[in-house]
Length: 103
Image 1 (cartoon, one colour):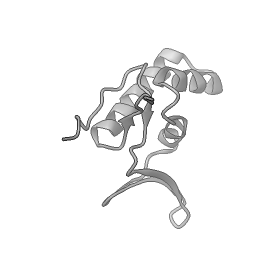
Image 2 (cartoon, rainbow, N blue to C red):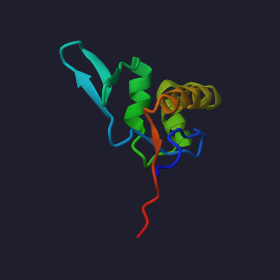
Image 3 (cartoon, helix red, strand yellow):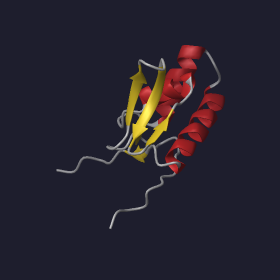
Image 4 (cartoon, one colour):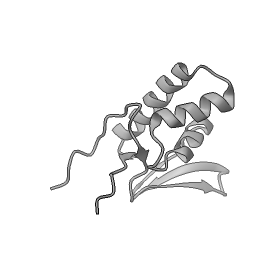
């Protein structure tokens, strides 16, 4: 039996798209989409930028650091927005937590 599907996003989380989902640019519609079995989500421009940073290696705090530096914006505000956006995607099944590699 699989573990819980939804994750709780925090600053220490290392979110990544699950194996069955892909972030892809749709040339026809000229938009980024997340493709998953029988589902398509078209995230907005900012969500796409955040998702591109979610590679399973960076944690949410590091993503917020990068965005705060890039946009010269307060880290706390960006962190809160990033956590809220990623939690929404996780609740919909579009994100999972990167697992530590065990040898």
